[in-house]
Structure formats: structure tokens, C-alpha cells
Length: 153
Image (cartoon, rainbow, N blue to C red; front, side, top):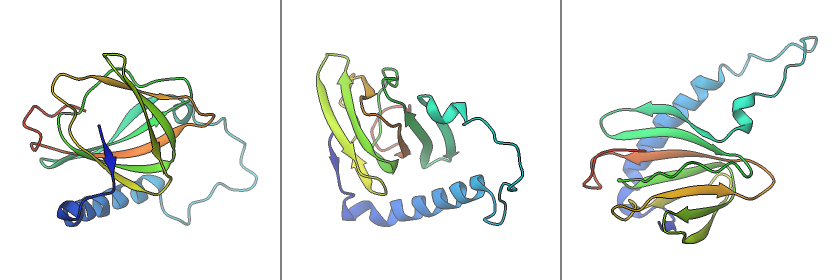
């Protein structure tokens, strides 16, 4: 898995996908005018925000989009990506990517930046581990049908 700045050949397509994604995120957050009243009872922090996992955001015949939260010391289970994808860092940090063969490599995501990742090598699984103090949150926009294998997140 190699991270790099998005290549020019796919920027137009990804920009249209990101536009859809932005609309999905804005609608999920509610209108800007909706605020918690100052006299409202305080609520506990959202338990999901602190737990490692994936939350589906959008899917069609071209892309699959999900939000991943990787909490400190709560790795994502072993998985693979059969198709290339764009990572958009909502809350950046450094993840250690551990392959099923035990190989380790660090990947640093800067908040607000987008990165291109190729499909994983055939048969290779990996887990994402956050050894930092804060959760790492990313939006993943995975293309469908371009990696030559079935679509799996």
C-alpha cells in the first residue's frame, strides 16, 4: 500500500465523488441553524466516536464510501482492499499498517488532506493500528470494478 497525492488522471472523477461526499456529510450534520440550546442537559460523548470501526456513508455502482475511526490501541481487524481508493483525513495521525505476514509500516495522514492508495497486493491482508493518543478519522472512497477482483472494503 503506497500513499501519494492524488494523480491528475483521476482528479476530475474524485472531485465529483468528493462533492457528493460533502453533500452527504453536510446533510448528516443537519442544518447550520440547529444548535443545542444553552440550557440543555449535557450528554455523554458519543460512544461510537471513541470506538474503532467503519460507518457506511454512501454506495452506488461506481464507489463505496465509509468513515473509519481508529481509536488508540483498538486496531481495525485484518482486511484487504481489492480496488484503489482515496483517503480523506478528517482527524489526522499516524497509523501502523500491519500485514498478515507481520510486516509493519507507518502511514501519516494530515488533517484535511486527500491521498490515493492503490489496491492491495493479491491475497495480502492488513490491520490498521493507531498507537497515538487521539482517534484517527478518515473518509474512504473506494472505487468499484477497477482492481480486477470482487468489491470488498
